[in-house]
Each structure stands twice: as structure tokens, then as C-alpha cells.
Length: 258
Image (tube, rainbow, N blue to C red; front, side, top):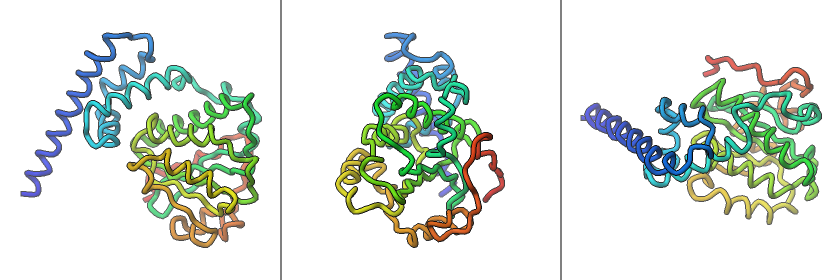
């Protein structure tokens, strides 16, 4: 009986995937083809897991998934995501070490670190910062397709000058819209009380489907999510990792980590 239900469930999602593709072609591609990168359109037509990810994030409601796909593909073209390379990003962003992939949580999800104290609000660099985050997410998506990420906001030694709400909202949108089903959880570590109001706003941005993934943790509580071997010393961890560039620090992808 259980096998029959599973089979019927698989058939149902296959139908939804096909329906989503057909409606996208009929309702969105007919309007205009130049608002999307043709490589993304082709991938959407061939990659079942990609379409399924959008559907699952929108509780298998096809119309809602289509809105997500439309917004996501427009963003990908606007930011030139398919062509983002190291050389397309200012070198100083890599050298700062404010954003990087390193280590795993207890569930085997890759850790995406944001060292908040290294961020400074600056309207002149916001577009490059957004592309920088997109570079990391796209790099990870190609290396580990379908595998979720755990985002760590390391708030140690940070203050209000380090919080750029536009940038934070963009990061939220990356997981709400541009990379659906990518977020395992988002852990805010060691948050100063002065930032409480700001993070209440962030919670409202996340929406009901993602707010349950937001975790606030002290330096000791974060050990409930991540083993000491992947935590820095200031969080009571034993990880000797020190960020430096070059090279990129994420080439430690053992596919057999679990």
C-alpha cells in the first residue's frame, strides 16, 4: 500500500513538472524570450529536479511556482549569473573573507559563512556584493546539485554599522526566490541585543515557509547544530581553518561526507 502511494505521488509530481513547463512556455515565453537567458530556459526544460524544487517551495501550486520561476530567471539574466567568474568579482571581496563556504553542520549540510563584522554598508559596492553572493551560490549549486546549505551569520564583534538591510534582504531573496529549496537553516550566532529590532524585520521577510529555518544561537548553543571540528575558536570550536585568498577555500567537497 505504501509503495502504491509513493508511486502515485511520483506520478503526480511528474504531471506537475510537465504542467509547469507547458504553462511556462505558453504564458511566459510567448510574451518575451529576451528577458531570460536561453541557457536557463533550456535547463528548465531538461532538469526535472530544478522544476521540482520550485514546485516544492510553493507547496506544488503550479501558478505560484511559475511566478517564482519568472522572477528567478529574470534575476539570473540581470545579474549574468551563468557567466559569473572569479575575474568578474573585485579581488578585494575575496581577500576580505566576509563570505565563504567551509565545513558542515551535524546533518551534513555545507556551511555558508557570513562574517558580519567584515561587512560595511556602502551603496557603491552593493551590486558587486550581490554578485559575489550569487557567485558562491552558483558555484555550490553546480558542485552539489540538490544539496541544501546552512547559512551562518557570525555576529561576533559586529555592530549596527555592519548591518545593511538591503543586502540582508537580498540574501533572504536568494533562498526564497532565486535558489528555492537550498536553505537547510539560517543560524544567527552571538547576536548583540542592539540588533533585535533589525532581525525582527528579517523574520518578516522570510515568510512562513522559511521562518522555521531561522535559528538564534549563543556561542555554546551553536554546538547543537555544528560539531566543534567545524567551528572557530571564538565559538568554542577546534577548527584551525584560517581564511586566505587565493585559492578559494571551498574545494573540500567530499561527496561521501555523510
